Length: 391
Length: 97
Ligand code: SF4
Ligand code: SF4
Image 1: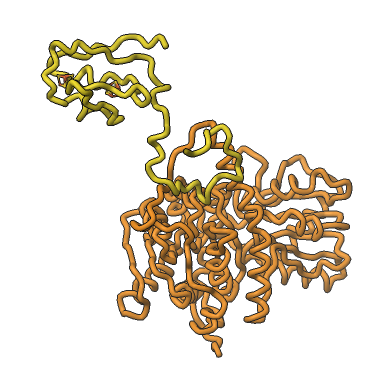
Image 2 (image 1 turned 180 degrees about the horizontal axis):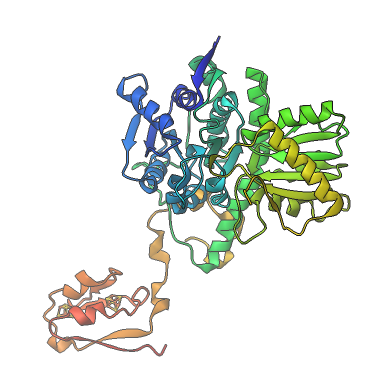
C-alpha cells in the first residue's frame, strides 16, 4: 500500500511518470518546470528508470522528438512552461492531428515580456486550440493522480490524443505537500501497456504526417474534432475507474458549496483552494456564495458547466490570463459563450488577476466576490475588471 | 486503387491521417499541375540520362529507342530537365491540353 509522503509536487510528478513506466522523456529545462525533468534525468541516470532520456536543444525539438517516439510506439512524457510551451506551439498541433498521445506536465507560467518566471495561465491559454486534452489540477495529489489518468486517457484506442496536465508554476510546482504516490504494482493494474495501433515499423510501413489538399483537409480536421469531442466519455470513464481503484474521484466541473448559491465564483487551478476559504468565510457571514472549478478545459464541459450554474444569479469568473485587446479573460469569454443561448442564465462578471505570480489571498477573493455582486447589481463601464492593479 | 479523393468522407480518414498504403503518391496525378510541357529534338540527344536524374518527379524513362521521355501523367512541367540538358534537346512549350 502506498504511503503518504511529504514531497515537492514537481518531484512527485516525475516519480509518478517513472512509476507509469515511461519509455522516453525528451525535454528541455525551463522554470518553473525544471525540477520535473531534472528529477526524471536523475532517475534515468541512476538506473532507477529504464527509459531513454533525450536532452534536446529546445522545446521545439523536445516536442518533435516526442512525436517520433510515440510514433514508434513508446510511452512518452515531457514537461514545459511559459516560453517553452510557446516555442513548442506549432508542434503541439501536429501531435494532436497525428493522434500521438504525448503526455505533458505544464507548470503554468507567464509569457514575456516583461520577463517573468512566475505563474499564471497565459502560456496554456495561448495553446488552448491545439487539439490536446487539457486538465487543470489544484494540488500535488491531483497532479499525481491526473498524470496517471493522462496516460490512460491519451493512450486509449478510442482517444489517441496528447494530454496536458496544467499545474500552476511555483504555487503548485514548488509546493511541498503530503502526497500519496501509488505503487508501481497498483498503477500497473490501472494502466495497461501502451499499444499504439499503427506504429512506425519496417514490417508494416506507414506514412505519417502527410499533406492534404483542399479536397481532403476539411474532412481530416472534422475527424480530429469529432474524436476530441468524443474523448469526453472516455475521460469520464477513466476518472471513474481511477476513483474506484484509488478512492479519489475527479469531475470535469467541480463544485464547492453550490447548494442554493445566488453567487458563484469560477476558478481554475491551484487558486481554487484559496477561493474555497473565501467562500467558507462569506458563508459564515451568511452570504449565499459557492465555487465551481473547471478541471477539464478541453474538451470543454458544456453540459456540466450549464448544470452547475443553473439557478445562480451571478457568476464571477476569475482568469489568470488576458486576451489583450479582446474580451479580457479567456475563461470568462468561453463561459459566456457557453451560456449565452440559454433562456435562463446568470449574469457573468469577469475578473483578471493573479498575473505573473501575484498572489490572491482569501481576503482578495472575498473582495472579488463582493465587487462582482456589486457590478451585477449596478453594472460597470468595463468589459472586465482587473484585480489588484495599482491606480 | 484508392477511392478518388473527392469521394472520401471524414469517416474514411485513417487515425491521424496515417497512410497505410505507402507509395500511393504514385496515384497522384501531378500532371494536372502542368502549364508547360517538354518537347524533344531527339536528333541532338546523346542519351546521357541527366534529365532523368534531375527530374524531381522521377518520371523520365527510356523508351524503346533508348531516348529519355517524360511520363505525362506525372510531368508537372517544371522545366528542370530542359535547363539541365547539356545539348538543349528539351524545349518547354505552353500546355494547351
Ligand atoms: S518538366 Fe521535365 S523535369 Fe519537370 S517534371 Fe516534367 S519531365 Fe520532370
Ligand atoms: S539530358 Fe538531354 S541529352 Fe541527356 S538524355 Fe536527357 S534529353 Fe538526352
